[in-house]
Amino acid sequence: IRDRQSPSLLEANSPQSKVPELIKPKPLSLNLMTVQKCCDYLMQHLICVGIFRLSDTTDKIASVYSSFEGDPELIDLSEVNSVHAVSGAFKLFLREATSPVFPFVLYEAAMNAGRLVLNENDSSAMQEVINSLPELNYEILSKVVHLLYMVAQNSSKNKMDAKNLSIIFGPTLLRPEVETLESLMLSHHAQC
Image (cartoon, rainbow, N blue to C red; front, side, top):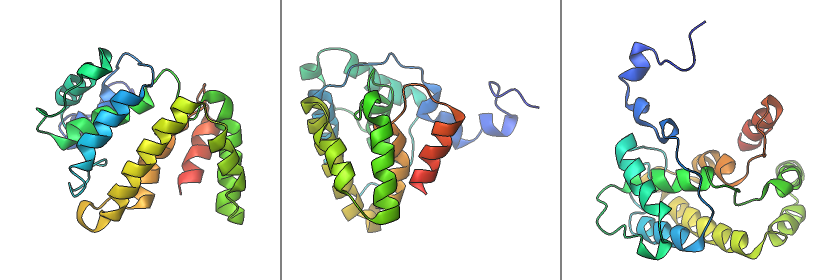
């Protein structure tokens, strides 16, 4: 059995070896200003192919992510010349936040509501979960969903349809406090 920590020669030389998962960032608290600045930048690049699917180098993503560590008012993405570095840092910021957009206490309710949406086409329970979000989380979710909606509206150009976006952002916005094999399988099943 190959050690999961050391990539094979093929993995080490593949373009996928430069994915943001290799970065172990300092978890940051969610804040609306960082989300707004990322969304504003990305809204200017809606037709970029694979806007959230393709990645940039670890160094470029880490450089953008490190700008999130200071005062959010001082974040300036105007000089960043890589859409994929910003999108990668944005996903990383949301995924590694000290608390996800859907707080840990809402994980079970959100997963159950998601099953109702999928199995019975009933969105009322999901609406209840969304309405129970803290105000900051609700505002952040609104901004992210608006961005994702606009990305999906341009899927003929950027190749990022709603299903692709849900696979990428589902586990970024909603995750359990402790990941178990069961929670990973439930998350994967909900995305399919």
